[in-house]
Image (cartoon, rainbow, N blue to C red; front, side, top):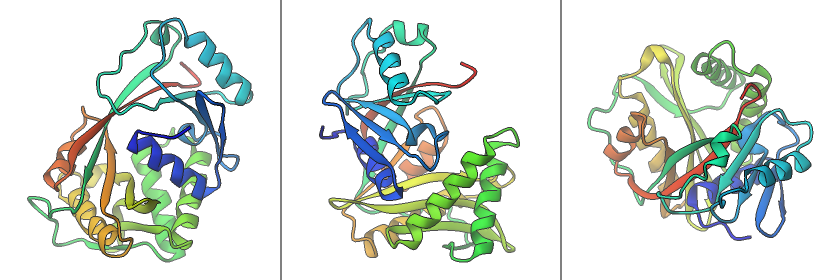
Length: 261
């Protein structure tokens, strides 16, 4: 099943590079990450078309058949439209719709107010990667899934050390305060991953500066002609990306049900 949505297309490519397995069921794909079973978007179904009314129960059954031990449910929809309808039986079944925006650009501009004090560089050492994990914990809260965060940090490091891309950090007096990744997703595409800023360091221009510097790496080192990033249209980060030259390209719809949903 070909994937038309650039967000899911690049996501699936990177999950495969991390070790995920993809099975084509004809009208949907099964993406499975055995090394991190609680990673929602490493263990999900990607529907080949927007779901119709009355199909929620069927998709829940399909997910349960593929992931019988999973406590979550994650369904992506392969569509580039930003106006895909949400059938009423999906929210009624506890499947929360999530709309995101896929943004693209050919080159990243400096943000309006770049941070000139932080040390912006790729992560390289054991100490750097430990700081990356610690930042993830600070950003997700102490009640986050610690095992998931540990496994995600390990996957990021493997992907980086394989030469697929780089994980950049913004350090202030030696402490990692913001981070993101950018990786080669094939066909001239480079995908940004997991932009995180310490809650104590927001509104300092760190995220925009990281996007700018990593975007230059994507163009000059990875040789990408199109840079891809995905954002929640209701969150402030999307404004940061637009200020750096990204433009809205596609909509993206997904559904989640958490263990307590």
